[in-house]
Image 1 (cartoon, one colour):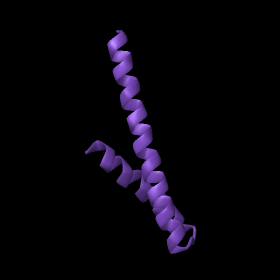
Image 2: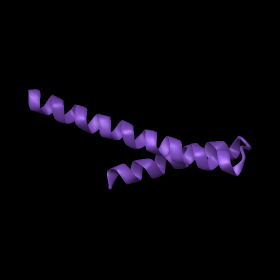
Image 3: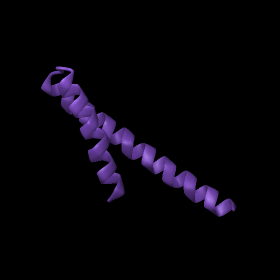
Image 4: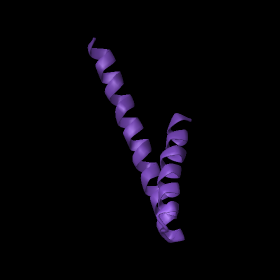
Length: 57
């Protein structure tokens, strides 16, 4: 669930910023999808890194 919420929030912020910048609908949708996936990837990497650090200590 956290991954989905991260995607919605990061993608939503990117879409809102694109909207205020006057981008086209296609560019707004692309930013929403692209940055949403990047946000999920960042959260996944942070989760895996935290688990690796916990195992070592």
